[in-house]
Length: 626
Image (cartoon, rainbow, N blue to C red; front, side, top):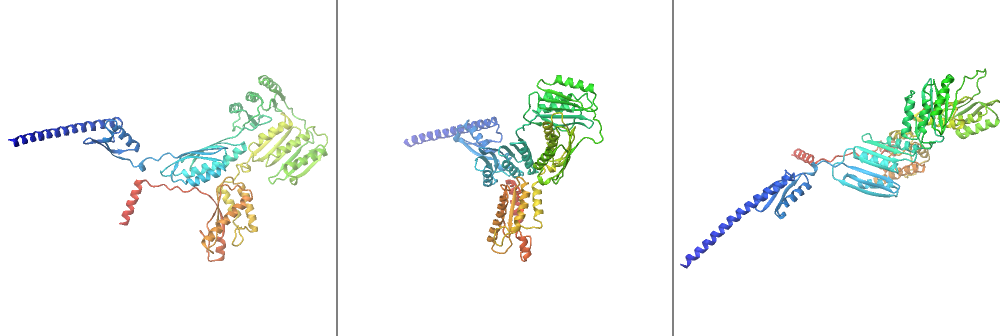
C-alpha cells in the first residue's frame, strides 16, 4: 500500500518535470525566433544587408562579410541595442584591406623664417630618415614640425618624383607653401624682387620632372619706377610702346585696349609698378593715346604728370591743334600738356652733326663723331671707361664748335643707353637719339626710353631698334642640368682629375680643371649632382673604397673653395667597382682611377603586389617547382 503511494507521487513529479521541460523549450524557441527576427530587422534598417542572423538558444550569432572594421563594429552595436550584448556572438569576417582602394597620399609643406612644417599622409615605404635629414638640412637650424602620418599601401608611380621636386623647390624658396600629390606639385612663394622671381621660375622650370604636373605662383614686390613713364607711337610702321608703366591690372587692361583701338596687336609690354603720381594715371594714359586717333601719326609721352603730344613732320597743323585742344581739356587736372609739331628741317651740304658709339659682342667700344670741347671729350672718355672698362674703349672723336647747348648731355645719355645693350650702336643728332642692338634684358627698351626722357626731357625723340635675345638673358640662358653634365664632360674629355699617388690631394694641373668645372657649375643653379670616385683593383677592397670616398670629397671641397653652392651635391666612393678598362694593364688601371659627375636621379618606383597577386605568384612558383 505504502509502495503504491510512493510510486504515484514519483509519477506525478516526473510528469510535472516533463511538462516544465516542454514549456521551457517552447519558451526558448519563441525567445530565439523573436530575438533573431528583431536583430535581423534592425540590421536591415541600419543598411547592413550583408549581415545575417541565426539563433542558438538564447544566443544570437551574426555572420557575414563586413566591408570594414567600422561596419563590423556598427553591426555588433546595432544588435546589442535589441538584445543583451552578452547574448550576441560575432562570427563576421572583414573584407581584405589589400583589396580596398589606397588613400590619396598628399603633403602640405610650409616654410617661413620660423622654420618648416609638414602635414599629410605618405606611404610607409618612404625613407623617413632620409626625408627628415633633408628637411633639417633645408631648415638650416630652424624648427622642423613634422605631422606626417603613414599608410601601408603601394607607392603611387610618380610619388617619389613629385616629392623630390617639392623638396628641391622648398630648398630654393625660403617663404613658400608647397602642396604635393602623386599627380601634381603646387608651389606658392614670395620672392624679394622681380629679378629673383625670374631666376627662381627659371630654376624650377629647368628641374621640373616631365611626368608630374606643376603649378608655380611666385609673387614679388612691384618695382618703383621714377619717373613713371608711358610712351606710345603711331607712324607708318604701325603702333608701338617704347615704355609703359601701369599702377594696376585694371589700368593695364584699359591702356592696352586704348592702344588696340589704334591697331596695336602685340603682347602687353606694361610693367605694373609703384610710383604712379596719381590714382588717375590710367585715365590720363587712355586719354593721351586716344588723341592720336584722328592724326596721321605722332607720339604721346607721359612722364609723371607731364604729358607731351608730338606730331610728325607731315601732320596737318589744324588737325594737330584740334587734337591738342581736345586732349588738354580731357586730361585730369593734375596733368600738364606740352605740344611739339616738328617741321621739315632745311637740308645743308654737311648734314647735321652726329656722335656715334658702337659696342661689339666681344665688348670693344668705339666713340666717333663731334664733341664740343676738350672737357666734354675727356668727360665722354671717362664715362665710357667707367661703363665698359678703359681697356675696351677706343676714341675717334673730334672737337667741333657750334654744337647745340645740350650736346654733351645727349652724348652721355647715348652712352648710358648703349650700356643697356650686349652689343649695338648709338647715334646722336640734334633731333634724335637712335639706339639699336641686342640685349638679354626683356625690359631694355622701356629702361632706355625712361632714361632718355629723364635726361633729355619728354619731347626727346628716340628711335629704338632693340632685339631681345633669350640666349643673352643671364636667367633664361642658363643651361639645363643635363647640359651642365654635358659641359663638364667636354671639359674633362681630354683632361683628367688626378691625385697624388695613394692620397686624396689634387695635383697642380687638376686645379685648372677644377677652375673650369666650377665656372660651369656657377651657372648651373640648384642641380642635384653626384660626384663619384673610383680606383683600380690594386690594394685591399676596403682601402680602395675609403680612398675613392676621400677623393670624391676632395673634389667637393675644391668646388666649395671656388664658391660653388654644393648644398645639393653628394660625394660617393665606390672603390674598384664598375671598371671601365682592364685592371691587368697599366693603361687600364689608369683609366679606372677616375672621378665621374652625374645627376642624382629619383629612385625607381617599385609597386608592391596586392595579396591576390602575391597568391597567384606563389601558386605559379609552386607549379613551377612541381
